[in-house]
Image 1 (cartoon, rainbow, N blue to C red):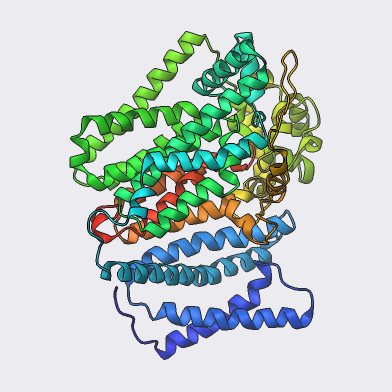
Image 2: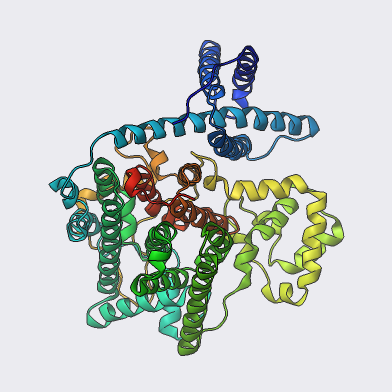
Length: 593
């Protein structure tokens, strides 16, 4: 690690001024106690801690580390400064003066949060240095390390821990779009609105159970198959961590997290398409790390190339936005493949072609119709509705909006969910006058720019501001199904209260702060931190995997709602990449540029 430098008088002055500014502006980025003594106590403590942090950061002479840390600080500052008023007041401060204060807050907290990232990275680098100084175990490590890196052992442990939770909610969770997918399958009127591969897999298993006994059995069969697949993927991840040389303690923590943390078993038996998609995101990220680590050696192994092709294609087939995220990540992935960019570009293009051909084949075999494009317009529709509800819209434009919606869009508007606006949209009218309504959206936006920004920020608040509440968390249980026998039949009902409490609060044992372990924004922040750390250490494999996860996140920002299930790929992958970040130098997951 590079040495620090002395702190000059000028840096001391800058640190003191920034610490005072950060303490002064703290009330604009975080909740403060109302009692005056506590308020000023917190302010003084913030000033002292910030001063110590800045003095430490300003003494770091590592320019590369600063070039990574402070851009991340800028992103985190934007998230915090814009997220706090949206989370508390559901609106941004109005006026030019308020905008200047926001700009000042971003500038100050860019330095403060950048310094925090820098200090965090320095601590991680020191931990890595200490690990490198210890002699490596001979003979493949300890018996315990080998055990928790064994695929079958991990697979068995995870299933043993998950099955009792599933039995408490037998036959599983059957909600969200699962009922719609099953009905379209049974009616023979499939569309590409939902991924055909998941619809066919789920519906066929449901049909088998329904023909044998009831739809309850069908849901149980699907839940069991999905749990086995997810446990197998977790087993692969733990074996991958051992191969990459991650510390035994961190690998054990990853295994325990997947096996025992409520989020993972509860999602494992949910019939939503996002679960398997998240698992294949994890698989693909680990293979990306291998490809960009081992380089030409990896590309010379046909079976690994085939596995990559199949994983990428299946990931895209399991969720439509998976294809958008994959394509979005391609330019960055190719740029990172120094010395083999043409071959890497061809491989990525082959993945997309395999997906397109497979999806086209499924469409032909099922005679599926096209899905609605309205889903992609969630944010523009929300922006227009917010302006109609709270802003200024000309009478002529209101008449156009009245033709477009079945009801007044202002009254339809729900800030954090676009479903109400989408469901009341006359799609035929929109299609017939698409360019006119696009011009309408632009005109209303010019009249109400702040409301448009607020509509985007509020709907996506749980995706970037830690602690922001979602409209729903997991939502357990089954939906009643007309014409089919489907009901809950818990085998271990005594376990239900603990997991139902978790679903309601996201807290474990009602301990304050534990809800952040299930927070979408925390996963996004951790992804950014892991990617930044990999950039500094020139671990191209982890960089590409992290950028792909961020592409998944970006693709969700235009969706109809900010939900945990849309980011299950991050919840699955982040713990694994975090453990891999501390792999020994000789086995680290990444190659030097």
